[in-house]
Length: 224
Image (cartoon, rainbow, N blue to C red; front, side, top):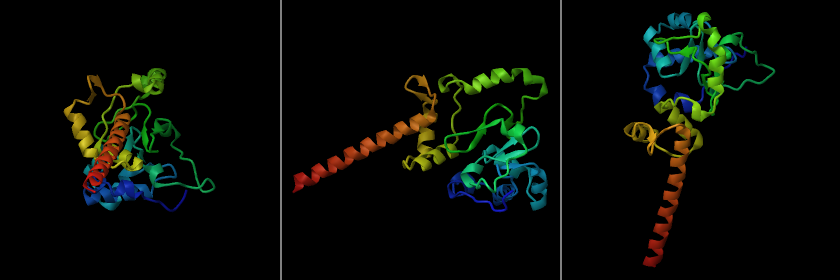
């Protein structure tokens, strides 16, 4: 396992991260420093006690989705692959393969839930032994086209991160507030893909900026 860990400024300089108490931020750094090469930590409670963090610090990290937690007690750093790239000759695969199969990577290379076995510390739920028979159904749901899946509205952090990666200068809070007021609908239809809506705003802004430049240029030409 590699000894060095990196932290992406896009994550630790975000308002969502900096708004957390310093004790919560410290716990995040300690968890990430002790994670394996794929971001999994098998003793988060021990690390919490070791640095004097509280249960509330863990709950905040989970509720803000900086960590994802499993029924087994293992946690994973959500943005691990954004923070760290480990060369193949130094990389050691995690031993927590069961938990790993429950995760997928989103467009930004952040971990996200593949099936409902990952949740926050306050509201843990899992497929468990009694519901293994449902796994084939859940797999089909996970693999279904986007239009068939239930829409989950994004967090402010997710929108900020997506806009930052696309460098589109869209105000994430304005985006969230606008669609909250619309009930997360596009026209008369319920939203299906918030990232597509961000890209639509992005194109609209480009058109508006271009129109503004043309108008300003025309004004100067008239004045001349």
